[in-house]
Image (cartoon, rainbow, N blue to C red; front, side, top):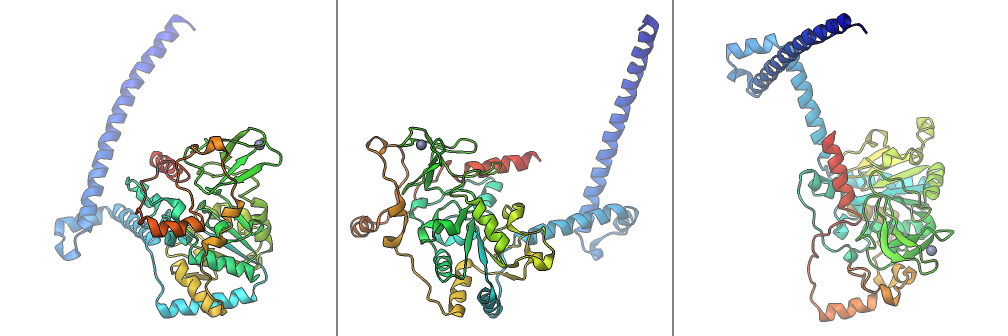
Length: 410
Ligand SMILES: [Zn+2]
């Protein structure tokens, strides 16, 4: 490059920089003006037509596009708001819908149940996206506290699902919940897919096939997103044990308890899918669960029980707005079945659980699920200690706060 051409370039760069600066400044002024107009118009729109002055009405006339954009924004806001609202069907309509569901269940040949946090709220496990859910609270910047999860027991809904499976009216259950309550209701492992893990199970993936150890306490107290070591070692090979939780942003690869193959097979064979207490916001992303590659009339019929809007509502044969326990109670009546009651002495977790070795007794600080006999002693001796301390980390908490941070940067 010659000297003169370099000079020329510096010159053009210099002048274009000044020009650019000028343009930037103009843009900023323009944007400020626009912002001010939008603000003024939105204030005028909040008044009733009678309250508006002639001058304000003229301003609205002159900015029709802005007026339209603002009303579009408002209806979007209203729609979002309405999707979060909890809706309850009137008693009579609820009864009628449950009757319809009962008839459909009796006609169906292969039924899969998809469950979410809404079926565990009665066990005082917080749901995620309901008005008081973990997600909602964290979104509002509030902290989440809950009583110790080891005291939770299978709810009426868990027990009804267990019975429906026993009666061969439900063939498979796919759950997003990590609370282990389906397993504790007595549902056999082969009929269950816990897609996001089970807080009572730790796994050695150095053993082949992977070795599972079921515990009577929450194994996730030291684990978090991308950090799954529980701090204990495999009693057979000495390998590090890991939890089975699938956090937001992770891909679950463990064969058990996730049982993806069982879930996918069940969906393939299903002629009826019953969704209970799930917002379906995560489940809808798992395409193999919905047979969306088939024409609409060849897909399984969809029945949804949830208080809030779900992204599958428009594809549902029937949407029931009711609490899961209430709906399942009515359903049992319609089917002429007695609602089974959870019995701790029948809880399979006690026979499935692996005991800790002598050196491992101090390896966790979470409360253990009290076995039936100890429970009896307990209720005579000690008064209920009330809700436990706020839980930090573990299978909920970290994952959710991460999701919140992600959303904020968007
Ligand atoms: Zn091992």
